[in-house]
Amino acid sequence: MYSAEEDPHASRIHLKKASGWKNVPDSHSEPLEATLDLGSEELKVELYILVVNSQGKGYDRVLISTERDAGKPIEVLSLGEWTDWVRLRFKGKSSEVGTVRLKLLELSKDASRLRIYCSQIMPTTGWTYPEQIAAELVEQVGPFLQRIGYIQQGRIYGAWAGHRTMMEELEYQHDWFARAAVYLMGNYDWDLLFLQSHAPDYIFDNLIKEAEPLTTSDRERSERYLELIDRTYEIVDRAIGRIAERADEDTLVVVVSDHGVIGFHSTRHVDDVISEILEKEGLLFYRSRAVQPGTKPKFGREEINWSRTKAAFFDSIYIYLNLKGREPDGVVEPEEYEGLRDRIIEALRSYKDPRLGTCPFSLILKSEDAK
Image 1 (cartoon, rainbow, N blue to C red):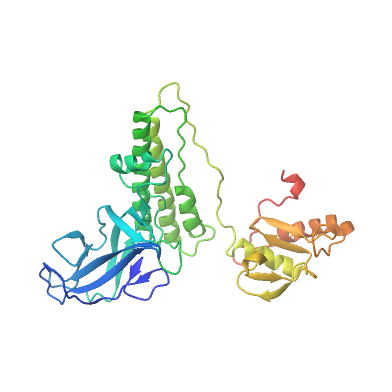
Image 2 (image 1 turned 90 degrees about the vertical axis):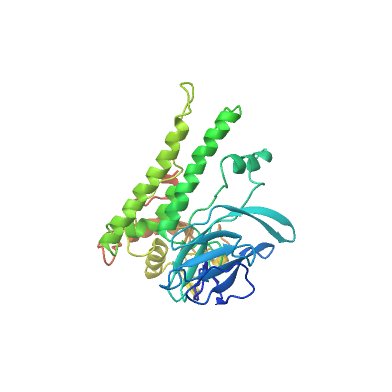
């Protein structure tokens, strides 16, 4: 992401009066320019943008080029438009060709607000076996897109660029999946075709708390998000259908999920809830209170006082007892082990979310019962 305003998710665009450009188009306001550095410190390429006022109603077009020549643009974008996919050579410690496309997300009439989204930059080789298939797929099917809707640059990696952009990339990605699968099935001998779609995981991670009617803070937002979830499954289903059409009567088609998902039945994160319960029970103590309860001490976010702690919570689903003789700083006597487990289970079952009035835990098991 690139932005003319300070944005923790974006690299800063510094607009200034354009100079040194060839073939500058007519503009009712002074043309503005900036550079975009794509890639990383190791491998990058510089693009040039020219912002113009083509209709006399304010800045409305962004020209993107590999050089300061408006007669040789990659694309001239209006609000909400994408460039075509473009191949660029990224240089640095080595040299590598990558594919990318850009989208104009925002442009105010005075150009004080300008945001440009950059898709994931994908190499044209190095992601298949045998090696040559990658270049073949790019040539026959189009550029591959591994991650969708993520902001790739800036201080925070992995933020979302907006739901419309996310869904547009999801559509492209799954259309590519289907076309690539059909191409490979038709041009190579094969015994097993395996395809993984991360789309449901993406969408639920991003939307589930506000999509869930029980926990949403805005009913209209919940309805919009549920529609996006439905649309995601339609996109995935359409790709599966196109691939399954190529299967003959001797081919077994299996669709499977590696895990499920449920809504947040709490207005607070489960890590915070469980850590708070353990603290109130006098079972969990910290040397410091840094950022986020329930996170592993080795990540530096919390420092647990193990000399006083009897139970600690890690990895969103596990509560560990600090058992003497098993743990380096164990304080729980073996004879109190079972009683302490029962006490923790009862405390979890008794907890009620302060706003919803319900218990967020649907299943609480001892380790031997979970096997």
